[in-house]
Image (cartoon, rainbow over all chains, first blue to last red; front, side):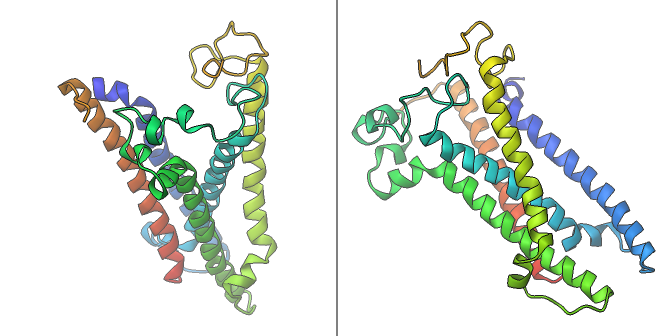
Length: 224
Length: 41
């Protein structure tokens, strides 16, 4: 099937996302139900759990860190390079590139996107659209994490007879920063490892790797 | 205007379907994650 072959990557990861999200919701529901029983509280339905901040905060804290990872990776690779890594432009190519290199404005091709041919605001927006969308998803999912975290903390405070806190107060709690930073550190470790390990290691056939026989010092085939 | 063969046109429709499906997943997911805590649940 041609459509399946042409779009296999996004279809695979879309399916993996849905299956693992369903798995997270089921495992999370059992864990949540056990916690409710330990506190002598009535069990909730699965639907109520999925529509609760207890579930949302766990989903959102992972979303925000993943999109921050890609946001920073896309932004950093404009200006910084790693010699020998296929994830990087070659040294000397730092920067946003000339209009000719980027095929925008008068240098656009006949089949270039119309916003690449446009000038001014539309060209600026389109030239940075990937970063803008990834950054927007990061900010909104981090906001969601903080809102859901506030509701969860207030629910726990109510169980323990503690006073309620506001959203700004939650932003200064160890819980918010622990949830945030435990995800960020693993994302940055993985990205750094990918950049550094791909200098000397190869995966035959993968677009994330240099060809097996390419010298270690070669940064990427395209830019050379 | 560039012209495409029926096969190229089909591939372009597939690309667009994939792109907008992912945009929809992100939009629905973000809306869900923001609305649920705002309702206090």
